[in-house]
Image (cartoon, rainbow, N blue to C red; front, top):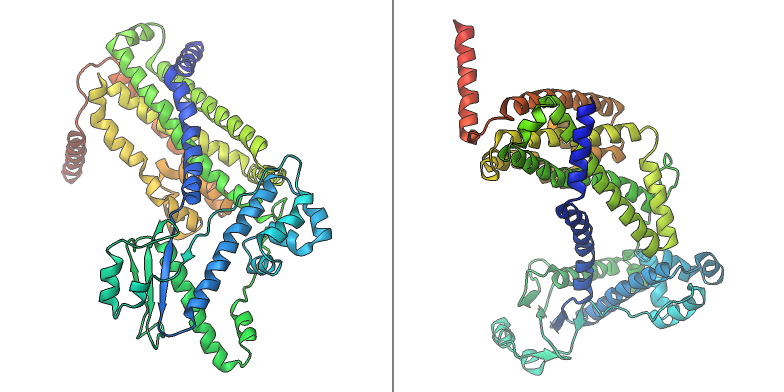
Length: 508
């Protein structure tokens, strides 16, 4: 036992003092930040989606103009809500003075909030009401540019006789509007009904579904409104009925906090833990594999075996690698926590803490620890065995590639599991032993059946023990060998031939 902990201490210090460890610890948060920030930057720098309308039916240009105004107001309201939360607006006091403004800031995604925002006159009047309730030090609010621009139709396109003539003029690419290029032309024919006689949409980028989706949604709403208006004489009443939406105040009565945001955080936390299990494991498992190969090539392993058994060497290396993985996760967790406390609004910090508390309840915590620890042991033992079978990094590629493909296979089903965490697919793949830790971490917040949790936990523990025993034999048998490892095809042929021999023996 003493030798095991000495080796573990040596391995841990070796891993955490390498420059590669520091780089991996820093690069992953940078990658996460870039993944979250870059799309926002591109969203703010979105292209000018300028389009014109040739409305031969009549009435649809005004409808699209109104739709563009609502789309712009929706984006502005969402940004204003985020701005108010960032600068810690005092919503209780705002609610006492202007309940409609407080409601739209609290829930900008609702149509009722958008209607109230427009009824108040838009950004300037609402911002004037909001400013006395913002925290100290707030900066200027700069709204995003409109997502769509309906511009005046150029004369040559307006006078074109048919679609072919419009296309010939349009695709010359000579038209500019307000300093930007004209992106799309919408032609609404006489008698347009959305079915047998559709509108024509000409665009240089039909793969951009933002503008085409907006136009389709707006025209669809207008067509439905016209049908309803034939039954209801008051068009305003018909329009009001068409805009009705059922808002739901969702809550989880079993959670400490009924906030939907806290519930979302609690649901995403296990998914994050699953991915962190993969990243932390493979970052340090690769170092584990290369360390074994280096020790074999320098004959250092012979010195180790003079004072410790192969099982003690393997156990020490696994403990050291797990310690390095936990250190990595601790640094990432502290960094993320510091960033959230420093940058996020106070209410979001509170909801994040509540979401984490709901996840780490007494009934969940033991299973989280079991899945996470067993996952680290399973994947670390596999990589350690591969390292013991190879004499060089080049040799390790013969087994490392197929093994990594098999281990990374769960990533293909992440979207399915997140969409339906208690569906048939999720329940079936959760019982595949080497994938159980990853999938069950993702499913815990969806409250799978107790028998599934207990059963998969027992399966994970048994699988971990069996893999450790098997990998320890592989490690002991190949630790001193210097020959090249068998190719993957040779392993398959060996398994097939062994099964054939067993079948012939039983038949005899």
